[in-house]
Image 1 (cartoon, helix red, strand yellow):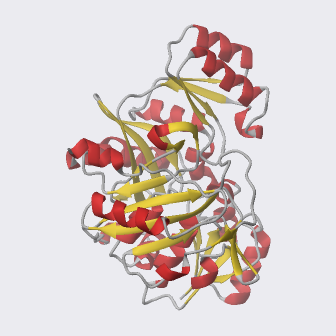
Image 2: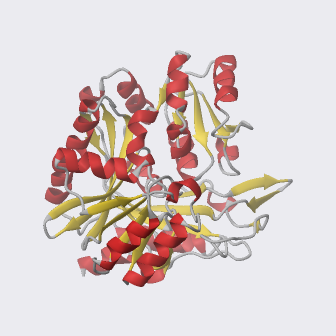
Image 3: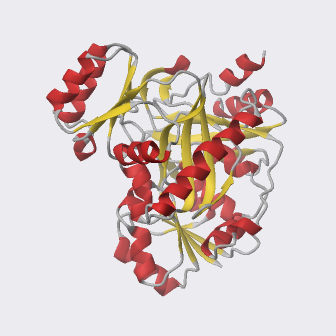
Length: 425
């Protein structure tokens, strides 16, 4: 088979890497890809939003399956456009992807179908939102309703801070159109959990759990990012709580989308909080998480192409997934200044010596090839994923590899996975 992966981040590099392992895949293309995907696939010069050009390429090249990595093309309707051309593509339709594209849609859906989540209110008028905050207590969460690359969430420790967030989103247009509507919701106490699942209508097959680290600095300090690292499994969260999340959240929301006439096909991501009352939803995504993909796919033993085909042909219920018992830890190396403004074009060294290391994967995100050099081209530059017999050994390996890689202004969190070790002590 010939396969095209759409996207240019670490998630897409991980997808390309995994698909290359399939005995059924002969060629992998990535659009537009990055410096890492160029090493294992053929990058093609189309952006994720160049839908007509991508359709033309797929037809001309005889691509068997297209796999969509990021959320923006899904919300732009790329899957619908491919379907109209009779082309095979992996990902939810625009209608189903709205579960990520609108926080208020997702919250309303959960309320309607009794899916556990925090209390909330939605506003399109800034003064109404500010007045509402006067009646609330902190901490409280303010979210831009639309897509904001994982950064449109402010966990406000004071009401003053919450009001500032509302003003920045609604009047300051900090997230553009995404912030013209805001959702203000209850702050949930507990342990965060990322739980992704392969979904075909009402058939839900969960993946192994992971935990992400959103804030940019150690100790969960600083502004939220797209994710600074992750690990899997999450040993301090027992299986019965993960199973409870599948039964009370993932399966009911898949069924709800079917009943709403928006059947979901693809990967559904549930960002959860394991509270004293049980699992509750923080957010849904309509695709693989980033950086969670970088710790979940290395543990997947089943051929990814088999799973994608099973979903496409409505045979997911006949497939049993196999997982590696190893633990995986990934640490993101970011550009100085991220998630704010940052410089690009800085030369990266040290990645080449790990290319043949079996238990180490370097997944590129914001990189590009410039002559003979690999240089930075984004905020999150690359992530180092390591496998080990437990979180501690995988973590040690990942951090050792990071000491051998460098670029000007490189920074990364030093405490990825530490939470798991602390909970297990």
